[in-house]
Image 1 (tube, one colour):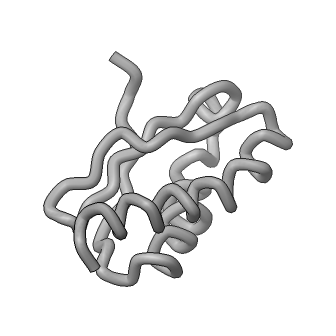
Image 2: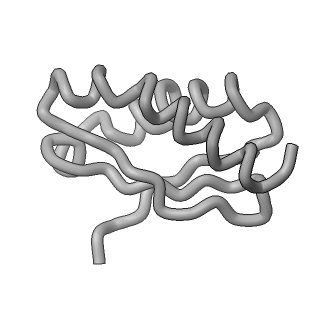
Image 3: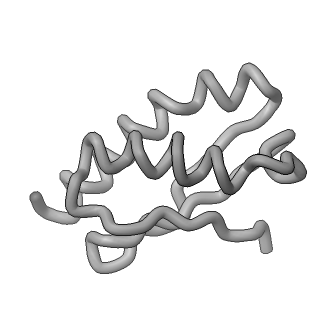
Length: 81
């Protein structure tokens, strides 16, 4: 899978997750994909201050992204600058 295919599949995964986050007043956006292995995302809205956002990130977002792109090793959240 090349970098463009990886990005497209990550976007599909985020689109699958987005309705669940939106139902709680949140959202997510792709920031970067490093070395075709590490995905950086940014949480928005209610997700930013949510106490379980790291659990959502690992068990929801990361798991869904890996379903589409198994070679992804890690998904991390970055703060808004």
